[in-house]
Image 1 (cartoon, each protein chain N blue to C red):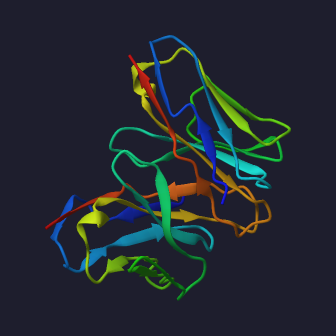
Image 2 (cartoon, helix red, strand yellow):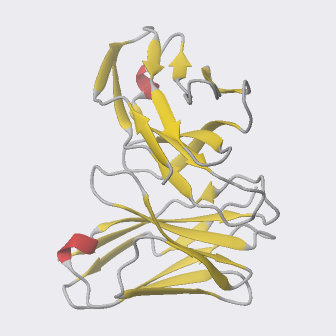
Length: 113
Length: 115
């Protein structure tokens, strides 16, 4: 079965650089979520989109932005990177209509040096 | 707001021992409950879920029962294996019949199983 695809899987950036993470949801899933998992931490919700509109917002820094495109894939843009942004970034997708679980991608490991 | 609490780790068990990881939650509504597992260096895998009171989720020998009266969802396995070594996250999602509800995770419990 198709799964959530995230790219790249690993990314190394320097401080103050920008990064773009991509997420391709499972086909026919219209809702995408982004989570950030710091070292030794639990995943924290950043932002979500439903039918290309932002549906909820969590602890996402102002330096980050995201959007969902017409084909339902999503991109997380991160600017002015800081050392503390080093983390595993998960994307999850869900089929709309309620009562459906989220399916997580393998994550993108971002290292900021 | 909603939250999930689970027992502190790390937990170290011998192979074939009985496992219990306690999890309790606080929610304003009637959430769905999940256990996710994260193996070293890997992503999150859904281990099991329960969507209503008294539901029992089970998978790979693990099971957990949704207890509304005690707001708990404890994870159990009768005989652990070395391959079960991982971090286990208890989680909830409110649902509310909508299509855009985030998952709230507990802090995770690291399990190490030794031969």
